[in-house]
Amino acid sequence: MALAVLAVAIVLLLILIGLKIDAFLALLVVAFLAGVLNGMSPDAALKSLLKGVGDTIGSLGLIVVFGAILGKTIEESGAAHAIATWLTGKFGISRVQHAVLITAFLVGLAMFFQPAFFLLIPLIYTLSASTGLPLIQLAIPFCSALSVTHGFLPPHPGVTAVAVTLHADVNRTLLYGLIIGVPTMLVAGPILARLVRGIHTQPPARLFRERKFAPEDLPGLGPSLAAVLAPILIMLAGSAIALTTSGGNALGSAVRFVSEPNVVLFLAVLLAFYLLGIRRRQSVESLMKQVAEAIASVSPALFVVAGGGAFKQVLLDGGTGEAVRALVSQMNVSPLLLAWGAAALLRGAVGSATVAAITAAGIVLPIVPSSGVRPELITLAIGAGSISLSHFSDSGFWIFKEYFDLDVRQTLATWTLMEVVIGLLGLVGVLVLNLVLGA
Image (cartoon, rainbow, N blue to C red):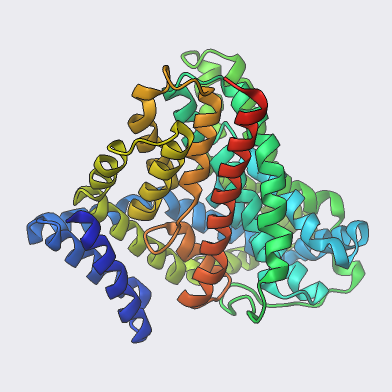
C-alpha cells in the first residue's frame, strides 16, 4: 500500500507542477495527502509535515544563509573572477570542466554536499559567464564530484555509518571508494555533460549578477583562495585531529565544534569580510547591504527544499521505508546486488541518501558474515545505491533545480540522470573489484 501511495504521490506532484503550481505549495499538498492515504490521521500527517519542514530548515537553514553570504562576498569583491581567471589560465577553456571536477572533488573530501555546494556555486556561475560555457556543462561535473565523495568516501556520514554497522575497515573502504569513485565521477561528470544537449540556462538573476572587473580592481589570488579554502582546511584539520584525539577531552570537543559545517561557514564569512571587504576599505554598511541581499536571494530556494523535506518526512512516518525494507528482505539475490538494490529503492522512496544507506545496512547486516563478500565492498554497494534514484523527495534535487534555474523535466534529465549513472557505475565498480579481490 505504501509503495502504491508513493507512486500516486509522484504522479500527482508532476501534475500539479505541470499546472504551474508553485513547487513549495505542491510539495506541501502532496506530502499531506500521502500521509492521509498511508493511514495517518490528518493531525498526524500535519505534524509529520511540519517536522519535515522544521528539520530541513533547522539542518540546512544556516548553511544556506552563510553560504549565500559567503558567495555574495566572493562574487561582489571580484574574488570569484580572480580564481576563475587563474583556473582558466592553468587549464584552458577546453578543460575547465575538469578543473571544476577536481576542485569540487577536493572540496567534497572535506565538506558535506550542501556546504560544499553553496561555497563553490559563485565560482561555477562566474566560470560559466567568463568562459561562455553553458551553465549545465559545468553544473554536472561540479555535482558529480560532490555526489561521489558524499556516497563513496569516508568520513562522510552515510558511508561511515554503514562501514561501522557492517564492521568494515574504514580506511580500506576509503581506498576502494577512491578506486571506484574517480572513474565514476569522470564518466558521470564531463563525459555525461557532453551528452546533455539542448539545455541552456543562466544563473538565476536573484542569485547572480554578472559583473565586469578591471584587473586592478580584483583582489589578489592569495586572499581570494584563502576565503574559499579556509572552511575546507578547517574541516580537514578537524577530521584529522578528531581521528587522533579522544572525543571525550576538551580538545576533541573544541575541534568537533569548530569543524561543524555551520560554525565553519560562519567563520569563513567573517574571514571573507576582512580579507575581501574591510582590508580593502569597504564599509561595514556596504557589507551588511550584501548580507541582506544574500538572505533575500536564497529564501525562495530554501522553502522549496523545505517542501522536499516535508515530503520525505511524511513518507518515512507513513511507513514507505519499512515497506521497501520488507520487500527487499524477501529477495534471494547476490549480497552486493541486494545491498545496492535495497539502498536504491530506499533512496527513491524516502529521498535522503544517508537514511537510505543506514537503513539498507540494517537489511543486509545479518547476511554479511556468511556472504563471502568483503564488508567494504558491501558498504560501497550500499553507498552507490543510496546515490541512485534521486527525485522529488530529495533536497538535492530541488537545490539543483533552483540554483541552475531548471524546470522539473530538465532536472530529471540532468540531476536525476547523473545520480542514476553514478549509482550504476558504482555498482559495476564494486562487482569488478569483487571479482579481482575475491572474498
